[in-house]
Amino acid sequence: MIVGIIRLELLIPENCSLKGKRKIVKSIIDRVKNRFNASVAEIGSNDKWQKIEIGISTVGNEGAYVDTSLQSILKFIEGLYVADIINIKTEIIHF
Image 1 (cartoon, rainbow, N blue to C red):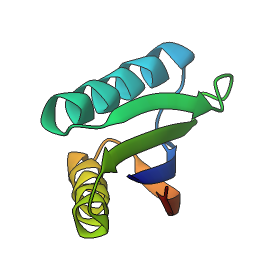
Image 2: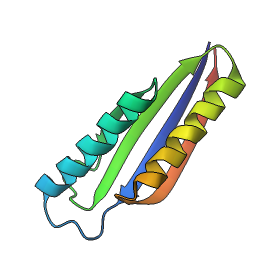
Image 3: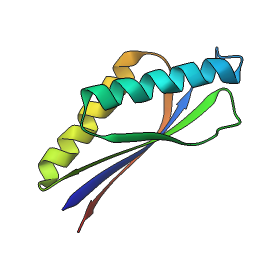
């Protein structure tokens, strides 16, 4: 079993409220869940209205498949143009 994990930090400089942040976070999470077979959740910076931290994970039996899935998810999020990506941490764990 191979687990792929992404920890993603996003910045939304034009945002001015937690309500606006929640709308963007929900949009990103829903779109990724609907398009890919991945688990997605907001994992930090809950009280900061310009910063988003999202965790994404996917599981497979081939490393190439998991890596390709993670790269596709990152490209998809970049293509949404709703926030600037400021940090990406990717890890693949073999069990």
